[in-house]
Length: 464
Ligand code: A4P
Ligand code: MG
Image 1: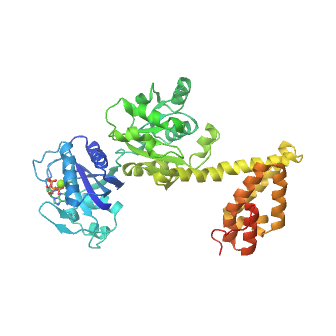
Image 2: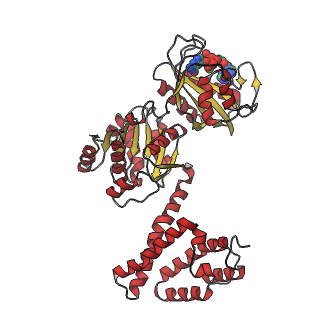
Image 3: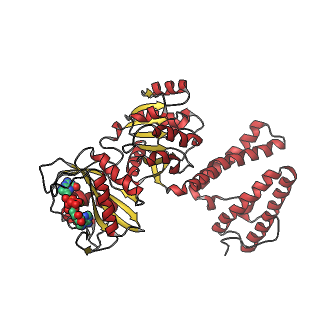
């Protein structure tokens, strides 16, 4: 794949829609849009008696050679209804190749870098968001400082929407814990929640009135007037809800669909993407037992974010408004990412449940069992916070205490085989931390490994 930077411009018709048409059409033609700049409102340059432009720059990956890419860009311009009348005159859509790898070439139909880019602030400002250098090693900052163009170039928004992020009409499809907490919180922060939909009609009316929004009659009705559609149903319903939301309307070129699933990729909203919508996922790395705790804990959480290039700047802005900490994530890593959350949260829960069961089995009251297990767990967590997982490790494994390890396993094998299996599996994993701490000698580590595997010792991965 080759890397290129494309400059987009429009000053006729629905300008944002034209830019979105360009993004969608490029992706339909297998040009991967990797990143997108903000959208800028710019004073016309050259032929000045025309309307202001919207400009943006895209970073793309493509298999197409430069001339084929140019041809594709021109085909997309034509399909956007471009008429070539006045040179430098009004246009529904202009797509220029600014940079293509480190190529410096001039031919009859194509000059790279774009011959006039250094004289244009409407190119350099958005490009400076995505690139540092030109092929001749001049920095973009330097090019900007030396740019003779003094016309006005201002951020107008993102490819998701122009103007104040709070005025972008939002819809929520699915009003469970996270959906209703998110809608409520955004509304409190002055965002515009236009509509909510839930298959449970009573729940829908209740949440709609709580967040001052319209109770929609269907997914498509909720999405109808919204620019950003949150699909906050259960994971298993995201695909069908998204299909219904985007099924009846026309194209979705001005809409963005956002889900908040921790494990699903963006592919689950492909129905909307195929119609031109941008996609994003923002997932709070947090656990919510109920709506009240969701509303309390959502702000300030870490949010992982994946998304189409055009939706990322918007999603980032939204998370920042929630006082959250955004962490970008690749869509293909979503399942692995979720497995880490399950290990850190759910598996810890299950292990504490097992510990309490062992205590109960030897005569502790229910309450005593929990009271015995929890302080240990809490101290462990705070030590991990202070020292890191390896340094915070204590117990037989950390000491290289073979006889205690053996006694533990023997007792568990006799009374609670599932817990014995978990003890072995988690401890085998924990040997990595023992090795990292470096306090136990290699022979003891191998002996512990053999004991945990219930067989003869083999090499410990990562052991010296
Ligand atoms: N061409 C050569 N090199 C390239 C390249 N790197 N990328 C040839 C794209 N095309 C390249 O372009 C004319 C010819 O340039 C093409 O046939 C191609 O073979 P065009 O798009 O057919 O015509 P045009 O757009 O009128 O000319 P050009 O030169 O692309 O116009 P510009 O330079 O893009 O200027 N003010 C603001 N604020 N924002 C704008 O976006 N745009 C223009 C158009 C004027 N003022 C503006 C803006
Ligand atoms: Mg052009």
